Length: 193
Image (tube, rainbow, N blue to C red; front, side, top):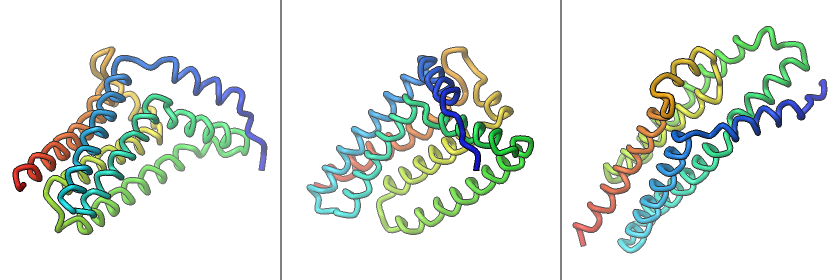
């Protein structure tokens, strides 16, 4: 295996962090707000002795914070740069499109199967929990597709207003589903008391 130099990869990654725009900051704020509402839902579930619900909402809050950090640090750019450097160093960069297509197809199938399994697992839980699962799956699929970094997908997702691209709107849409779900859960639980 050939050594992959990290100097250019790290420089490319730092550059992507420095280029954070309004959309990135709005998305981070949305992730943190959704995490806060998920913590609130977890606390409500704990007080109602709904241990499984509380665990779900705490896990959701943790995932949302991690996704917010990822949005700020642009870790998918680092992953993409490392993959590109590895492909060039090991002589298979000419085949990278085939690898990307296989990667995206596998991720799409895995996300669909995971979403189906999660919805089945959570089928007896409140509708708001199932709705949050859908929002998380939407975010996961979007983040994974973006990590694959197809240039034609980047161009499509990058369209829209200069400060707020379609990419950002689609990601925020998934976050809004989780926000609505956690707010709904909190409202449902408080009305049962």
